[in-house]
Length: 433
Image 1 (cartoon, rainbow, N blue to C red):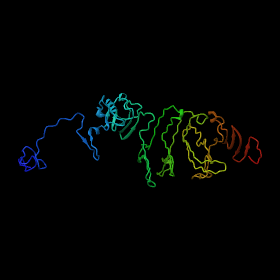
Image 2: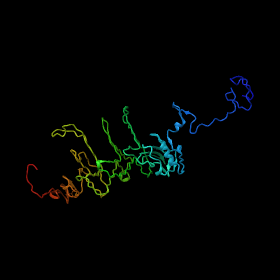
Image 3: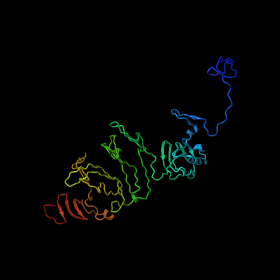
């Protein structure tokens, strides 16, 4: 609108010329007056109004939205290395914390004297969100002086996400729990749902080792066997079958795809177990609670009443097959590679379906031993450590080209390679042995 033009209509503007020093209004139907004086400032710490977050429905005060998390900078923290301010600010944030609220660190370098921070309130565990915040050049995963409170530190540092509880309270759950339940959809045959997935790979020139899942466990408790607790487990799997599905507690599949023999740097282990004991052992002696076992299987089957009745055939569906290769230190003594104790056993080792491997001749060895080793029938002669390491009660032993039957350390009979039998006692003809 040209300056000085008379506006033909409009409430309050009809017949009023627009002053030359007032800019035109973009709408073309009015002219704007000069800006008025600034209004008085609002009260300190107050927002000027409410906002509605995009996509939501309820207006909220800005100060309420800003208080959803207790930001340590709102309590005076600098997080720039300045000493003497960050610790008190964290303490003030903890004091103002409502139940189950989080303390937020927006990144930076906190300067904290760890032993002097931050009081005992609240008494429940606190969630510290500290992505990108360091202290002394290290990620913030410490628990301040709040010993035994179970505080959880969640932080991101140098490419790694941390969930850390450095001072857990008694009988607490761990920092991560995953619940996954399918109670409705039948799904698709062959599809596998995996609540936790670790996908990793390397390349042909890689030298760095990759462990998909690693548990490092240091136990210092001296309470066992008081009441049988604690019982620590690095990795635990508990499965219970209620229907007809295929179910496995632990499933390991290892596949060699390099088309090279193991001697050509192509070792493949489906599962590796390292078991090291530092000191003498009395495992297995009467009255001793100790257990040192490479693999322990507890297997049972609930059968209807009447089973195991003489003359009544029964079905024993619980069958366990296992290969056990012992190749550790020469100082280690394996008492029982296959041990069956306290259960009803109809077989310990079954090689009926074994076939001759390439490069070997028949017959297949169901049991292969070195000269001097024994097949023990009734265990140690005395229930002492010396007796356990000494002669067995009755056993077969091959030595000096003969197979001997020995009782209490005395040779009773032998058979040599030509079939000649010698007996130290009396041979009595009888219809039955």
